[in-house]
Image (cartoon, rainbow, N blue to C red; front, side, top):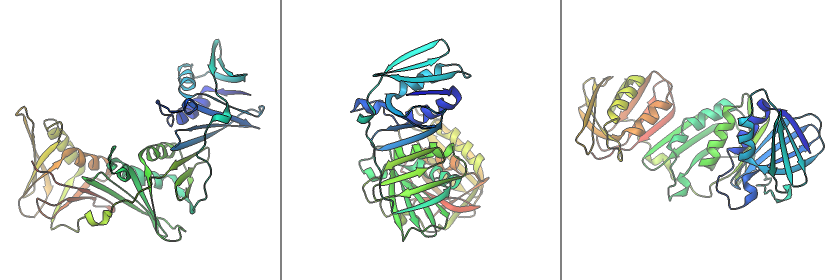
Amino acid sequence: MKIVLPREQLLPAIQAVTNVVERRQTLPVLANVLISTEKEVATLTATDMEVELVVELQIPKAADGAITVPARKVFDICRALPPEATISLEVSGNKAKVQSGKSRFTLATLPATEFPSIGAFQPLFEADLDARILLDLIQSTQFAMAHQDVRYYLNGLLFEFNDTGIRTVATDGHRLALCDREIALDTGGQRQIIVPRKGVIEIERLLNHTDGTVKLSVGTNHLKVTAPTQSLTTKLVDGRFPDYERVIPKEGKMHVLADREATKAGLSRTSILSNDKFRGVRLVLTGDTLKASAHNPEQEEAEEEIEVQYNGDDVEIGFNVSYLLDVLGILKSEKVRIELSDANSSCLVKDPDDERARYVIMPMRL
């Protein structure tokens, strides 16, 4: 088996599959990438048994074969070679030789028969989607996923499908992000799946380099996203997502309309002197002024005044400033709308021009 490709073609493919490989593996073969050739196509496959990524490359006609080689070592070699290099990978016995110009490397291999596969699954339904729409759904919500929460079902992103569209929801118990997009689907009724954090990250990577349409295949325990030259399969989280509808506040009686960039900049400056652990800021709404203040155990203080449009009663409320900044960084509009009921209730943050995305942030005691 022999593959000869320009570095600019091989490097992105090797990089993509290497992202899936975990540094610490229980099985040595999981640190490898499976390279197989058939006719004029080379297929690169990597898995950690939870996520599997397959990348296809067009190659000059070569003898059919398959082998596994150390993923990160091949990636590091390709990255270290000059941009204009041509790379040759040839398998001989239990060794793989990588050559480019006067550079030569010999790598240990493992048999392709030892490489595990997530395997095929029977989809419950399939749909062709615009890659940009799916990417927008993920990017609008994935930042609110929990990190290593004992409630394992929060360490992922909820996809809710019905015949009229897709909704994504993420929450860590302190905040919630929700985004809707209207798309005609044939799902046979409402379906919910929870995609684990790593699966979400790798799907986002795939979509970032994909234009046009992707195919979504949803199974009982798996989700597969198929692009023109890549396909990613991820196992799903086996759990029940909480009833998120209950925590979304109804329209609050206090409405704040503010310039998004000015608010983001003011809160960013205030956060510099917030408590590193709790990240709390106190917000005081009086007339058309939002006053943000923070202090820390060193008795340092920060205060900012931000012009807003507000006609309600004076109110004082505390929030984790990181949660507010995450939302302000995701929104794309010039303005931001914040709805409040009282100083002890969660706030609802929206884009005034597009309310398909909603963000809930719980208050904190300061």
